[in-house]
Image (cartoon, rainbow, N blue to C red; front, side, top):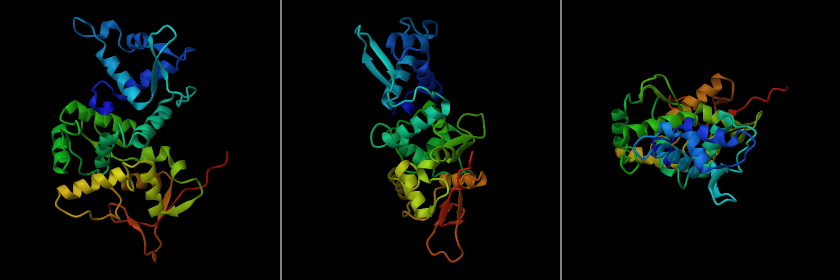
Length: 296
């Protein structure tokens, strides 16, 4: 997917393009105008002064379905924001939620599949055992049975794009300002964005049902097909069976603890409960609930 294989397609530039197309009274712009605004001639390199950065950002946005490209009445290549976008709310959180659903759900069996598999693998890494530089990340990825070249991750800059986008999508955050260091694999932000889809306020469901809903909405996370594929690959590479299927991934375990800490949801397991799941630290979880929505 161009979001992580194209060095130029970082979140800030994709957001900049979306806000550019959402701004003002004009609902569409020519591609020439957009390229000039994203990458003025003074910021272009080489004798020809080609706008490679702008074109690659547009290509990534088009692959996402964020922009529609067409020819205007004068036959000029033009573009506008997708009709699926609410142009009245071009906020960062709105766009992040929209892109997250596209990347982690809508396009999961198509353009974003390899990227989703990388993100599912990240969720299996404990927060106290994360690699500290690009070389260590590549070594861990290969050691877990994934092919660096096939997944397009043979370049350090592409690893940076993975981390830029995993943070933007609410799947990770970073303790350090050093590249590739201090990455915490914690999807609590993503889960919080979509809690209403997973579990309405004031409701309680079993932990199994919550995991199923989570995997249906985001197959990269526990309960999802991409998560199971990543988990099976890791187990195969480590020479073991697909063990601990009743144990939540380190990433989702951390997210659930964070969400409970902030009273976004609650979970528990009665002493006499026979069916339950385990968090990565062995804590039992049988039921998940959300507090009622506060009255305004």
